Image (cartoon, rainbow, N blue to C red; front, top):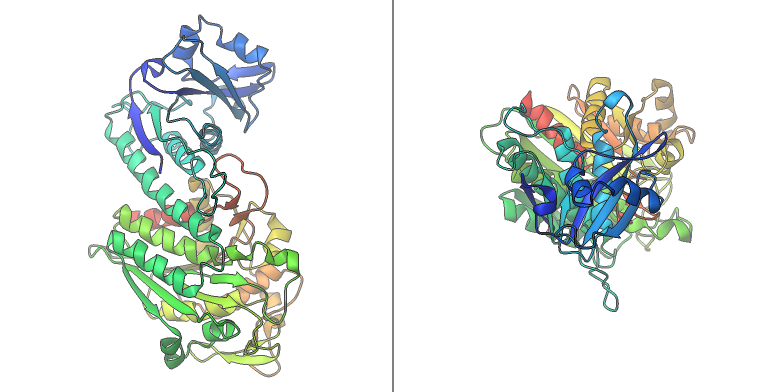
Length: 507
């Protein structure tokens, strides 16, 4: 992974291959942002003219490279767009800085060392802790933007990511700056793990391999990991997980990760959907809709990533993560529409659509998580196509108890992940009533994301604050890379979950 450091030296004096400056989109043309003063001076005050000659606009995502012709140690200068200049001298939004840093580092693949001079608030001794959000945004953006997945490329592996990024700050020795860099490295490492898991072809990541990845990740950080195989699942009565997985030759698993620092008084349970490949089962998806279904374990991966990040950051909070994982295939023993499954805990569910399988494995895990008597419960899943219809491919939907839902959304805003609060209308609940069982696994087609949330609510322990995050769209980027977001697996929800854990640990 790209290494991070900070320097209080004049940016143009730091040995590097490239120097990155920010440019805003002003009403009358590009506006050079703070931090570029030394480059402008070394260019004889002509930076603005150079940018104008290159037709730089400053729009978000724009990256323009130009040679410094020996004016600085860095042979290459890079102007990265920050978007519209804030009115009345206000600072840039942290997410704009995060995306700009990601765009610049992504564009600099193949360069060994780069200096970032994006406009940061003062992180000197007078700056109160915690460190400014903009420094955190730039560090995260730089690391997240350096990601690449080349495991299966043999002929053209592509350029190596930037090896080292140096951040220009006012006081490199200031404790807050060091803490921000350390946090960014822990979070970015967790996101990279999730992206790797999501990007791995489904033929190489069955439930047993996903469980092995969780064991390996936990072992590095002292996280206890227990895995129930198909025999243990059958003995304990996990009907949802077993039912979804019974059409595949690759048996299901239930992964339990426990980070228990010993000094914590609060326990948070995280539950993530882990369908390693989703064909839809006998309710078969169209062929094109299956092409990206290796990402259907993105919720489980996010839980694995967030739990390990909590351990890496040594957060003073108990985190227990559950990842119910199965492969949903239409084999000869697959569950049929109209079959009834007995879930963990005894609830009987009529399965009318085998492609609504994620809620079945989550239901088992939610009930099991309740046995740990958590103070808070959050589940995350690539659950419904209805999420994409309602909110698009970049905005996750959050449902649950109003207070907990809003707390998750607030954490997502600080983390820089787009999430939107959604209701759980009580009038939709009746559509989940079954004529032959306690529930059916699908309800009213209108509001499908909401009825899925209402189904999950049936398995949440009474009195436990709960939120459900639907990341069906944000977990996988089918389009071109942008900002710090690569094509393919994105690592969605990890940063929000880590921020939420920090908030809950703080009380």
